[in-house]
Amino acid sequence: MFPASSSFLLSYALICISEDCDWRFKASSINKSELFKVREFNDNHTCPLKDKVYEQRQASSSLISGIIRTKLTNHKRKYTPRDIIDDVKSDLGVDVSYMLAWRAKEKAMNFLRGEPADSYKKLPGYLYTMDKTYPGSHIRMEKSSKNEFMYVYISLYAFIRGFDHCRPIIVVDGSHLKSYYTGTFVSASTLDGPGHILPLAYGVIDSENDAAWTWFFEQFKIAYGVRENMCIVSDRNESIIKSVSRVYPDLPHCACIWHLWNNVYKKFKKSHAKLSEIYFSMAKAYTQTEFDSLMEKVEKVDIRVKEYLELAGYEKWARLYAPVNRGWTMTSNIAESINAALVSARELPIYDFLEEVRKMFGRWNCSNRKEATQTYKTLGKKYQEMLELNETMCTRMTVS
Image (cartoon, rainbow, N blue to C red; front, top):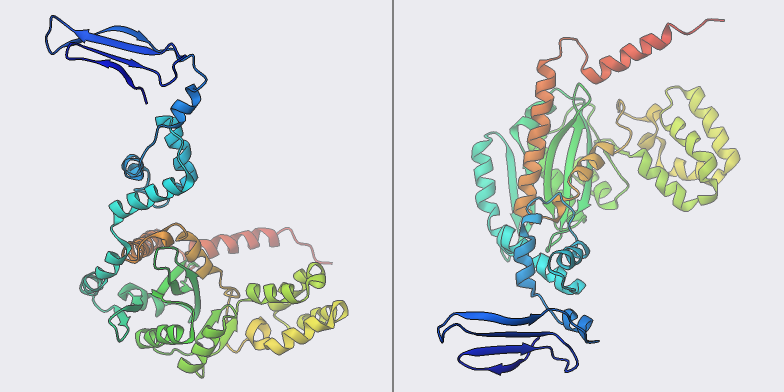
């Protein structure tokens, strides 16, 4: 950056790389000792190369990764390469490229969490420890013929016991992982008595294909068996539909009314605004008269929508035609809620991700248990408040 104009045993001088600049630094020995004293220092750059001089300062990805590690310890914090660029500029006064910032983040993440491949090596020991810690659980891992990871399935004992006290309506869904080796997080859940989400099973598969979903449902069947009036609710994923029919040939498989409506919207966009309210009212209708009346409105707006809904099968989406009592579980929202709660954790390596899922479900169960111990009425808090609100509203009604 600054060339030495002279360098001797007893004196040292620096000048700017620009000959026309007044910047200079001079120092000399004190009484011929090893101690030097600054004799002259002009910190004022007068050259046109000033900006270029500062732009040439560089920082390596290793240096930056060491600086930003503390900001990456919490996986829920969103810290992007663009944020790194801004922080390095603010703290060090150095401009770095997006790629350099990205490499620095990767190095920092690997330092904190280890190499992504090493995470898979921890799984056998982790699952063994879980099986010993939660006796009565159903925990399985599947490997390929090459001894490569394929799937993992976890149903903890608390989930299995809790399901005995819930309506057997099971919601399943999957969401993509964003770690180095990707994969798909899959879960099955239901609503407990007070209306809270009760996880039933979770795991990781390679992708949402027929073989993976079939293996997941086979493990679920081993853990939970088949109950009377049992039903599975999901989106219209073809692999889920095929797998349910294979593993549970006699079990009703209902559609999430929200995902079905999205399909209607994509196919018949012009009719979307007029039919949205009608469709959801029809899906939740309790009487034949109400259902038929709403279907007539659909037919008047766009007969193609009526034909599409008929082809999908009324028993798949309409409460009136459902072969089992679905209650309020008309969508896969509870599974979507789990996915949303794990959106940042899905970037973690598989070992850290599974541990984050376990801890999250543990917090949920502890919170629900605490609420239950403080409930002294027949209904849970959520439904008790709804009942009291309806009772209040009823007192204001008039009869004509």
